[in-house]
Image (cartoon, rainbow, N blue to C red; front, side, top):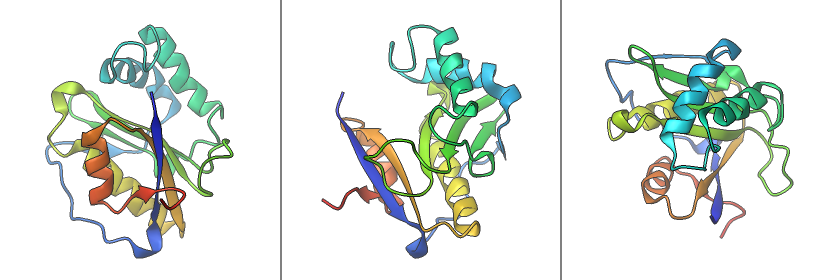
Length: 165
């Protein structure tokens, strides 16, 4: 599956107002890993987040272990209703050479039953606000090239292909 790397210059950020309502948003912590793993597995087509929910949970735990860079909990966000229904995880810097410098969003996923309600947009808005407040210059992420809904969301917030092109 082909992916695109996108970046956003936070110095030129114009954030939309709050979006999704009826949810609580907070910083995730390691004790959320099992619930996040189950949601991660349920949020993607089979095999993307692992072959099983156990594998998906191990991948989420690896985020706290630094496999994808140092997890920046304060720049990460979960959305809760009666349970976690969405999550965005950010690292201070991705460990891959082909990514922009600075923070990198390693995961953004929403329960399929909660999609199209502004949850992902609000997770992103809160993350970007926290990064801007921390004085960060840019943020990057990767997205599947055929994920038109995600590309539309990221583009609406100002994300552009990185490197420029």
